[in-house]
Length: 87
Image (cartoon, rainbow, N blue to C red; front, side, top):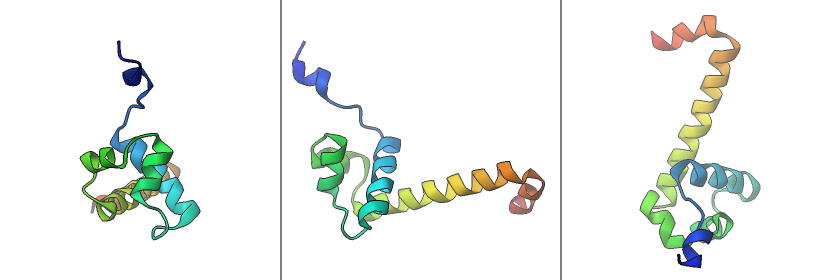
């Protein structure tokens, strides 16, 4: 078996979004680059473009993820009000 294959990290959208969120919090959106993100994930920058066409699309997914987490937490905290969102 090729030793390079064993060392490659598993890359999935959720891992990319999680690390991108952290980098954006630390550095800001403008300062974070796809190359920095790739380096942090231990992959080549080109690998990220398989998952996200660009930084703007990645930002949309980061924002969607953060908002969904907040909504889920709010609904878990106060489920009686959760029905308001469905109306």
